[in-house]
Structures are given as C-alpha cells and as structure tokens.
Length: 343
Ligand code: GLU
Image (cartoon, rainbow, N blue to C red; front, top):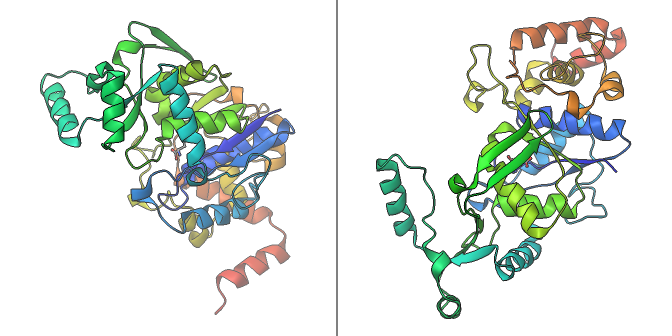
C-alpha cells in the first residue's frame, strides 16, 4: 500500500516548503488509495517551538490537506511523535552496536572541535577521525559503567561505492571514504534525524519518501542504515529547494515563507495549491489552472522534475486573482465581510 508522510520538525511555524511537500504526499496517497501520515520530528530539543505543531495542523486544515494518521489523529503506528518513541531508537541503536555496525564514542566536544579545526585548515573534509572505533570492549564497558558522556556513531565501511536511487534524479554514487561516521544517538539520549527517520519510515511502512534536496548529502548514510538493518528501502524523491525569481533561496526573513503571511494577505488556499503544484510538475494537458481533485487524478510522484522551481509571488497573485474571479458571489461576499468587518 502507498504510504507517504511529511515529517516536520517543530522548530518554527509552518513554511511554504512543508506545504509544497505535503501537497505531493497527500495527492499521491489519495490517487493510490493509500495513506498520508504526519510525523512530528521533535528530537531537536534546543530549537523546540511549543505551538509549532498546532500551527501545522491549522495550516493543513486551511489547505484541506488532511492527514490520515498523526499525533492528533492517532493510528495503527502510534505514537507519531518522535519524543514518544525514544525507547525504540535506543533498541535499534543497540542492535546496530551488537551487529558491529555502530559504536560508542566518548570524545569530548573540545576534541571534536580540534579535529574539525585541523581538517578545515588542511582543506580536508570535516569528519570524525574514528578514534573510538579502536576502543576495546573492556574500555567501552568501563567508560559506560563510569557513566561517561557518550554518543553512538554508525560505522561507515571503507572503500565502498554506495549507490542511492532517487526516483526523480536517478542513481547517485557516493564514495564511502567521504561519508562521516554519523552520530545516531546523541549524548542527551535523543536520536539524531538519521537514525530516527530510518526507524520510523520503516516501522510506519512508508513506501514513498518525499523530502527536500538538502538531504541528498545524507542519503548514503541512510542507504547504509537500511542495509545494516536488512530493511527494504522505500522510494526516495528529493524535491528541489524553492527559489525567488532572482534564484536566491526563499528565506524566512522575506516573510512570504510563512503560511500565516498568506492567510493574512488574502491568498486563497486553493490558488496556492494550484500554483505550487506547477513548481516541479506539469499538467498532461499543459493546463495552468486546475482544482486539487484534478491534480490528484493525474499526479504521479515519479513525474516530478528536478528543476529549481521559481516561486514567483507575482504569478501566484495572478493565479489568486483567477480563483477570486471564479468564486461564487455569495462565497466571495462572505470572505470579504470576514476580512473587512468594519466596512
Ligand atoms: N524533520 C526533517 C525536516 O524537517 C524531515 C525531513 C524528511 O522529510 O525526512 O527537515
């Protein structure tokens, strides 16, 4: 069964890029009669924003991209919030240590900082130097008994070509000698994204993973983790970063990345969905204006294009105008009264 998900981190208010991915996940799950899941990846405690999750639901409701399973809805694979799944990550990290695919690392922050400085000066890739890989079992047990702060790192094999398949971009090859021994479990007992995402996508039976292209450098680590566990790899689709017409990255500071901004400025959710559907996909009949139901009917994840989509507010405003002009007078009147109660 097709199962898709968005996995936002509650580190800020919902971003247009989250809705961009949610739209593809939602539409594909609907078309395939599958399920669309929301998982909250709240493992970064330092950047946690308390009402971010609530705002995400508000945004999903506003757009009508209603999920089938999530922390607010529950479901067969609950809990859907990573902070409530810590025991699982410990268990799986432990499994990797036992199988010899991961190891305890007791290096201090100061030592790691020094290594990084040296590597940067020598213009070498910044990576952990694998010192703790050579600790004996006795040394590890002793340090653990002494409750010395530690992390768990994955053991990346030497001299391997790792082939990662992206359904939009094709096969990508990585040389394992430049892949870092990634931390899987942090010193605070929380997993990193890398471990948690693999465990959860597997346990939640996610068939198709749509995520931003910023995760491509981590892709070989994830492929290795699937291999270590002996799990089937889902299909991956890395979407391109949304850009301004001048090609710069849409940034939070410009304001129009936040969903609230669109709500306040009088944009209609249906026109935004229509507009963003066209960033990375084109209608088989080259139509520009079509409802969500028509998008669901035609959309296939594999038809997405790996082009840098330009998010043009002027074009979106034009699209919004089309929708406003098409709107039933009564509905439009209601919206206007709601928006301008004092007139
Ligand atoms: N929590 C990750 C993020 O917010 C999710 C990435 C993914 O979809 O796997 O970037």
